[in-house]
Length: 302
Image 1 (cartoon, rainbow, N blue to C red):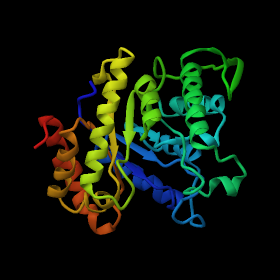
Image 2 (image 1 turned 90 degrees about the vertical axis):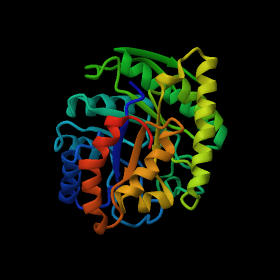
Image 3 (image 1 turned 30 degrees about the vertical axis):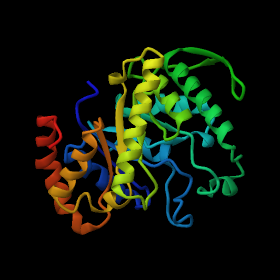
Image 4 (image 1 turned 120 degrees about the horizontal axis):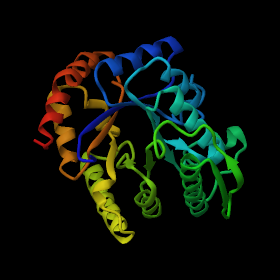
């Protein structure tokens, strides 16, 4: 199952509401497998620019789509209590009629993200951030699988937390974990249905992204084997980032080159930013309508 190619689009939620609806409806009409929003309090690059809250927007957009999978890439766990997040997830799963992909991530540090100073929430040190993330994933997983959850962790404590109704998807909505470093990859190996990465920072070359991504897939294989999990059951997903994100929809050749490069190292889900410029929209439509079906049918990198 995890070898089948999937293609998704992430939209940055800075557009007026009605235009965002139009954009999501176009993405669904073009046949993409999934559509995502980014879970940040503000846009890191332009903190004063327009920006809508991810889970509120996701619930609303669920009512304007019918078939496409929807999700947050990825939910920043410092922003939410894990039991509340589980409640949000089961609610959106019902609103979307069972189409939720639940993305989870540890969140960026305050060196990059102004959220902490803007909201007053704590900017955890890296070891605490990873340790808290593990507990959050465990809690969300248990809450979505069970009607009653009790949890006694180092950072989070739940006592007979009731979750009703349960989510439509059984045993729970699939979880995507965003992970880059070794400790986070170990959590992904144990809990994720899909692992997602963006390879490297925005200015990195495609060669660096490819090398980093391949190394991470090999680490995931190792961790899966250590816990007795078949590595093939963990889907590998890549957010196309940096220079590749800016040019991937410039032509069908560019798109196919990017997909083939990462498909060769085991990536089976590709998530792209919505086209950066309007002049890429015609190629974007051609790629979705003609090239992607061919790539899915062949199932092999060219």
